[in-house]
Length: 101
Image (cartoon, rainbow, N blue to C red; front, side, top):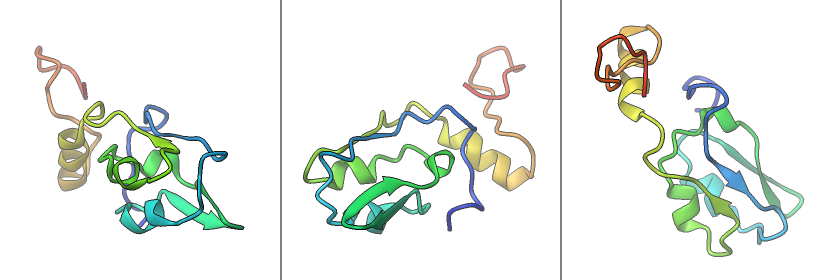
């Protein structure tokens, strides 16, 4: 699924410490957007901007190698953009002129 659905470029809080990764691959299994790949016994972030900060990877990482600030991103804006075919927009900036929070 990675590649089709994109987050706002360059704002994702996702971080991974490859030295703490056990290579179990659970992050790649639970990620709905194919952000991770597992090669050579270690996972890595292959498509950071596809991350929607759902937190499934961090919650399921037994070695604590992954961190992400859930809810920082505006999933509503992304979904609205997908539905309308326009840029991410949720008007959560309060004045109605914001394209996203």
